Amino acid sequence: MKCLISEPFLPVYQLIHILQNVHGVGGALGATIAILSLGFSCWMAFDCWKRQGDAYWIWLILFSGGLFALIYFFTQYWDGSRIEYGLWKRFAEGGRIRELRVRARQLNTAASYEMLGDAYLGVSKNEEAEAAYREALKRHPDLFDGKVRLGYALFQLDRVEEAWPLLAQAYEEKPDYDYDRLLWNLARCQAKRGELEDARKLYEHFLTKHSYSEAQIEYAQVLTQLGETEASRATLNELLEDIEFSPRYARARERRWAREAKKLLRT
Image 1 (cartoon, rainbow, N blue to C red):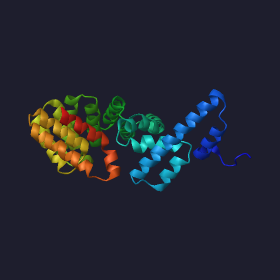
Image 2 (cartoon, rainbow, N blue to C red):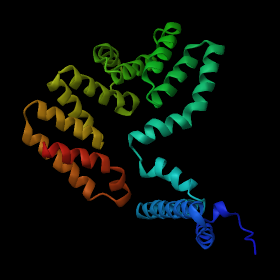
Image 3 (cartoon, rainbow, N blue to C red):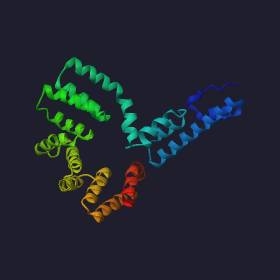
């Protein structure tokens, strides 16, 4: 009897059906793909359960023929990695960027170009972001947000000497701007410029407000460059302890920074 339930939504039944009808090389290949798909889905479902994720995620992962397992892999399992913020995010934001680009050409306003720059900056297309922010500033030279984000883009392009005056001036006007992201980027900028003592002070000020693992690792690297090896090791060990005793979902999210901290401690 033909199964009345759609196969793509029932990977277990699909696997059983394929295994019962293995004939020749094609059948063996199909069975192998089905087994790998089921194994991958179970792996992602188990990871979701470990992180105490929502039950609907587990349901979708197990009963979508591997589709939502793949989506979960990129959006949750690799959370905080270059993969999500690179390829996956660019794909997700591609349509919106095309729409903003058309709108900017039509409206020809500072605000429309600033929004386009923000979209480019969000997917790390920093050269395009720089061009968009410069177009916005042509139309509105005193645009505070545009100047700051132009500084962010220039910093990401490793043009720290150009980024520094924009970020420093903005910090003097609004020290708490952008939930202290401006402060963090200012610290990074000074570290790259070789102004290590100033970078140290800025990082210490930032870390009194936030406990981002990435910022703690950058701070430890500054301490190492200043020759304060013990203080650097203490910072990294404290970070590893914090990660170790954090909830399971947080440990999974911080794995990348835990590996980086261990690598720095070895060297």
